[in-house]
Amino acid sequence: MTPLYHDLAGETVAVFGGGAVGARKARGFDEAARIVVVSPEFDERLLSLADEHEAAEHETAERPDGPSVELIRAAPDPEAVPDWIDRLDPALAVAATDDAAVNAAVESAALDRGILVNRTDVSGGRDPGSVVVPATVEDDPVTVALSTGGTSPALAKALRERIEAEIEGAGAMAALSGEIREELKAAGVPPAKRREAVRRVVRSRGVWKGLQKGRSNGRQEADTVIEEVLDR
Image (cartoon, rainbow, N blue to C red; front, side, top):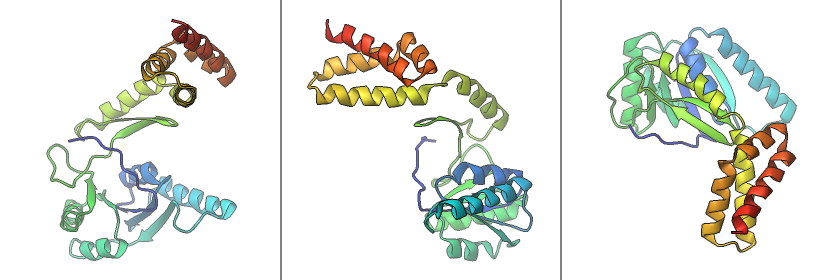
């Protein structure tokens, strides 16, 4: 499978199943999309997530097409699933129930309509249009995604924990190096020199350590590195 990042802002993600797996999936998309969870019962984490979004909407007067979480108490059988898919019209359908027949119906209905689908109770080979949702590690604006192809969620979790420690501060470095790149470009520094300067900055232990103390310290260290490159 080919990894891709997909922008779901303003789209609907339909999650069938309100247990622990459904809650985890909803949590993975709730900052961008409209989440609709269809289930006869809901995990406490889902109830909390819905409450968080409701409170945020009241505090910020968020626009109606922004991120939200809606819980619908229903237990559609396999025959009813296509009607639910048509009604919700999602960009992505997640099959996360404990009923294999319902999950298969979600998968089939979504694929028939050209909708992306993530089925949580299978691993290995998948049909075109079926996706795996990777574990992610974020230090905004840096995001690292990893997947074991659905074969070992435990390994994905273990790797994510290791990567979290490795990329600490990567967000600040991304912001700083992006700023430097634009400044050098505006100053008319030749492309080769720009690339070398930015490369030296992101690989400098001094800059990384400086950023841990604060942005101004990191910038100071970066300026020293840049001067050395430009003076060559």
